[in-house]
Length: 205
Image 1 (cartoon, rainbow, N blue to C red):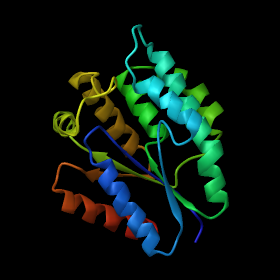
Image 2: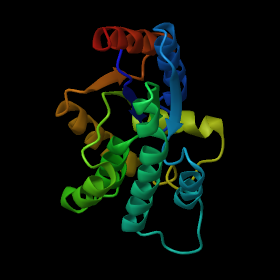
Image 3: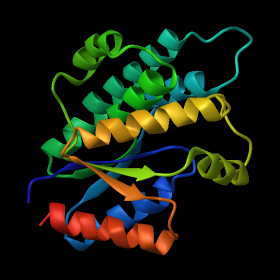
């Protein structure tokens, strides 16, 4: 079976970590090797960029700076981890990928798609996930869950309206991409896991 790149997307509090464990178990049960990555991060340099993105600074962080940092970290992860793993036959499970930038910086921050497009081309050069699972959660519910985990980072403190715009963009992107499957993340976690497994069973069979 050809190694695949499977991405888990969603707002804060959507339950990505739990679902990643389910996906990892599913792939392992198929007898396939797999690794898990996260964005931004996943390499030493990309993790340093992650700290820049999520940290608090005594200066204004422009939307464009945030966007470029995201794509810089993504490029490092892609060329140093994701593509080499796939070439060796190792499946990759991604905690976020390009859809996040389109939703967060494009939808949430309001950066026009025509400004994002050149960065996407430079970074990805046509590379796409084989399958994306978008965990859909109401922003208020998701942020409540996130607060329960501890102090929110800079992006998580962007406000409810920001996350409402981000969710709206996620749903629009999912509607227009046949490789993206929406999972209702507002139902009990056992039901979320069931839906994830059923989707994987159909799409990977």
